Length: 78
Image 1 (cartoon, rainbow, N blue to C red):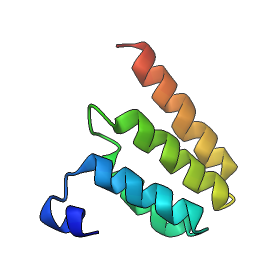
Image 2 (cartoon, rainbow, N blue to C red; image 1 turned 90 degrees about the vertical axis):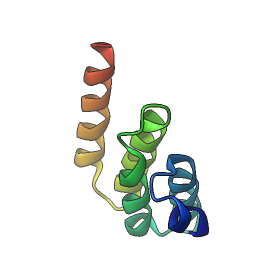
Image 3 (cartoon, rainbow, N blue to C red; image 1 turned 120 degrees about the horizontal axis):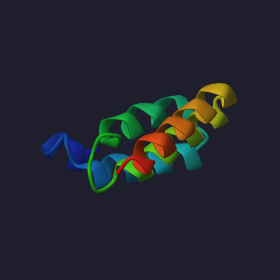
């Protein structure tokens, strides 16, 4: 959290905190941190997967599937 307080665009820190919160069985909190990093060029795909995992852990598998299929479609255009 300190790293994000110093640099709110630190995607690596956001993903790390999101993963930690998932490990602690706190997926609803984790979602927000993955969303902070989801548009980062270097870490965006990891954030997207983390976000989908947090959705699954929250019981929202349909939204998780949608997030992942949208990510695949957008990256296949690159």
